[in-house]
Length: 145
Image (cartoon, rainbow, N blue to C red; front, side, top):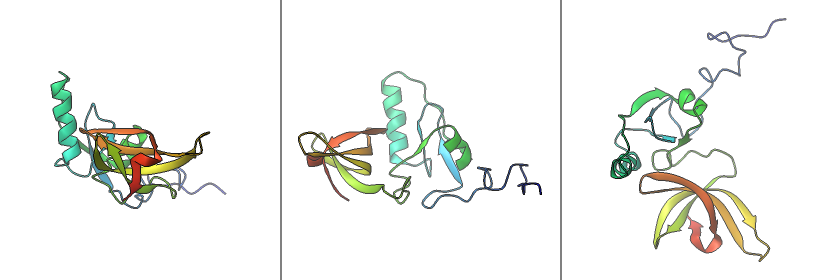
């Protein structure tokens, strides 16, 4: 018995075009040529900050393009945290606040680690000056959202 195929002639369940949109995301998103994340709208503050930062450093900026979510994911882009605050890439991911230069900014905690000094640190993703960063922060630099 042959496998059931979708309209793109792929095995049902393997086609990213036909797959349901993950909870917290949208089927169509906006991307820029030099960006690493996708956005809900062209009015996103983080997107505008990223464009300003690129211009400050003499880089070319590109108009946002609307694409299918599947295209953005296939390109390896992540979700913009301010645009998609309800999206969780895994069941363990949790919203948090990250201390950056004396200010608390929204973040997404994806993993806790315990160091040899018995202190906890977390792998977090957060936005600073329009750039989405992922790094390890000490427990003192993290708090619940």
